[in-house]
Image (cartoon, rainbow, N blue to C red; front, side, top):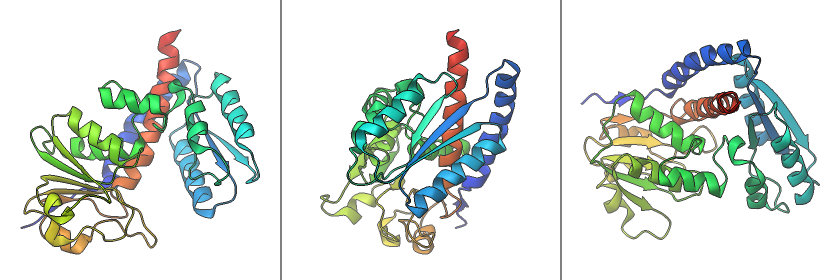
Length: 281
């Protein structure tokens, strides 16, 4: 059986094409969408991510404001930086690159981001709104997963979705988004017993566990749709791609699956936030 490869680059491109036009309209109205990214410390992979996000912004006409703080920065100083950005009307979205150095209270920093500018979906307020079905900016990876399902017109309603992972910015919100679209959702985690048997029940399987090739081929039921949100060293996902693709009717590759769409959702949320500021005036 020939399976469908869910090409994230194609999905991301279609989102970005629409954004270019929307950015143009905003600029004609005198507003340039602006995403502020805050990087604390010198973690090389975080620095690469921030640079990549900034470059993607600039490609479609979004202003990228990059703030780099030394790793010695204290929580209070980080909160002050975020507060200044909250008050800056020219900034529409704020992204705090995580993880931050261990001495910083990351959760407190996230909660300081204004809900109107929480384009990365990291505040508990934003998560609550997402779970209740009216969140404007869900976490970007869960939003990317939903975008891929919508783009390829994969039915969600009435399907059994199994999500492996319960992190606050991936597993939990994607479970909520799937539930809001009338899937029956099972969320698995490190304490789940008989994990392989539970995964085998899934019509839609979302891997968000952060362990390379963790999901085995014989865990997947014939014809399931597999979305791999894992990103491990060496560009390896959480799913054993070769084995799982033999069973799946559709599957995301790594790289080129969920990743590119995640960044395009961040851009989309920033443009959405800029449009909101116009509609309020």
